[in-house]
Amino acid sequence: MSDLLLIGGGGHCRSCIDVIEANGKYRIRGIVLPLSDDTDGVLGYPALGSDEDLPLLLQETPQALVTVGQIRSPEIRIRLFELLKQSGGKLPRIVSPFAYCSKYAELNEGTIVMHGAIVNAGASIGTNCIINSQALIEHDVVVADHCHVSTGAKLNGGVNIGKGSFIGSGAILKEGIILGENVIVSAGQVIRRNVPSGAVIKHDT
Image (cartoon, rainbow, N blue to C red; front, side, top):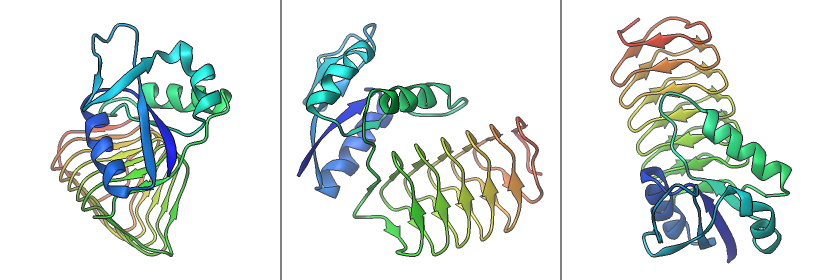
């Protein structure tokens, strides 16, 4: 069992802890938090320091996962991911034992697949992504780096999601459509056609 640092201590971190404990391959050493956060730790795991302490912490525990959530913008997760890479960190792929991930799917570093999610054959998930609880990633879907597919979202076959995009809870994406980079799809929306980069979708399209 390998030691693992968690970077960020909010609500998403608590969900990640539950997945990591269930996964059973990693021992959580502690949480790295902003200096402004007033906490002794998360779910019994200690606060080990702030971002400034990462180079030293990674010398002792090189494996780490970004556990800051992503709703409107991926910027914080991207910054922390790049900081970890620059500091020599190694980012594992973590899959809940209560999720299904096809052996014919591709998961890249720093990505977490949470409880009840399904990632089917031929799907490709980029780096530093969140595939949240009960999300469905159908066959041949491409999810680029730094994306968050929220709880219960459904990406039908052949969908292509650009870098840094956010798919809200319960959203449904029609098969074969393409979303550009940094797209935000609000919860519950049904997307039937391609969406350009930077768009914010608040109504079914």
